[in-house]
Length: 316
Length: 302
Image (cartoon, rainbow over all chains, first blue to last red; front, top):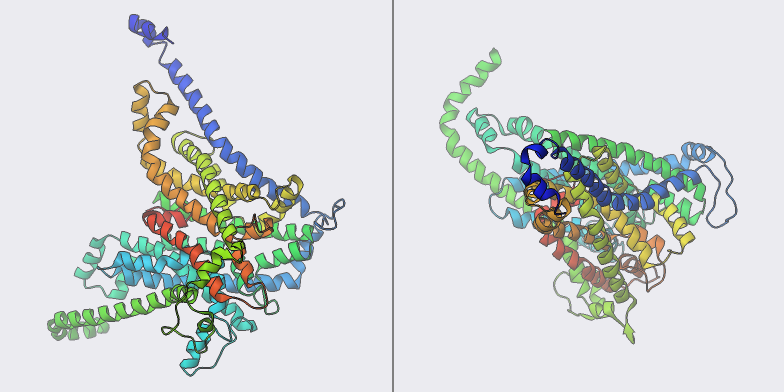
């Protein structure tokens, strides 16, 4: 410890040429050691809890394993995959999921952006308004699902009660094929419109004021300003929000489970919910794993898209 | 040409009128916008208000047709039922305690694992850093229903089914990616020169991190931990598939379990939901400055 220090002070000229690389190298080495020591625990946990289970699911997806029957699993290769990809049931669920994702995300985007636009034009009470609008987003899906189930109840739900006092007919929101899916979309929209709003608002407030001023000097119309200044500047951020919501909506399970349990019939069964039924009610673990792996592939594609846009945004 | 002439002709006389007209139009429009915002705010907040209202209504009024908005009898019985069952603590109150333990411990673990990793990713030249970070974030995007199938089998092998430890582990694994991404943003904001200066003064890299950078990161760590806490607190899918007994079960599946029977005590459901949601809203208010980063899992920052 004490040796090197006097050495450098006693013979500065001699050591200067030799020592600088040495501490440099040893520090870089210890840096690498530190990096490994700091990063590996987190990565190991992820490997154990995320990657390993997925690899196991990948293995199971090639077998006819059932969690209840037990016994050895037999390799069936791609049988599970072909069964799923050719199943009319799965096609129906995929269509339901698509309608749900597109419907909910489109509604949220339009509404969320509209609210953000309206708020961004206010000068007073912006903070309070934003806070109020954000409440639904922070609630648990369980609370949201339960509460809307109560409000949409055909008999004593407040929605039908309000419709009744307006002289309109009662609607069986959750027990009719078509309205059930619409209800699901409405509830999801209610919860996640604030998400889009929050991000759109961030984009809108970041638009430099001088651009608008320049445009108003040129007597550009409101619509022109919106189309040529606001939208192009907010769009990249909005796109990220939309993709994020699309991934979340695609994974959705909680809300379906609580609000409709996939019913009536199978009209609100999304892919996630169907996987659950195959895995935990049908106990076809092998098939469910293949189903899950296919869903993971979709999520990976969407995530790649999301991350690519994110990267682009960060580079700009 | 013709078009431009047509446009040009009316502008002459109109131009004189525009300032007052525009001002009036501006005010009218502003009123319209405020009205629209108010309507939207009412629509967005009504379900929350209705939930709070239902939680303090007497059962008779909860099921009243037509619904009672103002003239109902106020009672706190439902809240009492949330915590106290006949002759002791209710199953719900136990589930709330479980939620506190599971969410708390998993958040601490995720922070302890995630913050150093975030610092290392921010400061050092790690091999394929970008790919590693993307990989980390994408684990967070896996559909829980899919992940839970192998996790269920895995836990069955090692006896972690229906244990708090099992839930804590999976929640930690779900919060670590978020913590790393969120914290990396905060670490990036602290100049690396502080550490370099400290190291010139003779501190080691680790000491520099511990004594100079970490104190500066405390607000960021707090915000990140709050989000992780909210995520774990609200989580439902893993909780419902990996736990079953009352003394392990967390609050979300316990509250969802209230609607299992033939008759549903909606007053109790509302009260339990209010008790469950209030801490989240309070915490979310505390971290409102970091909300964008939080809800996008640390990916988007202003």
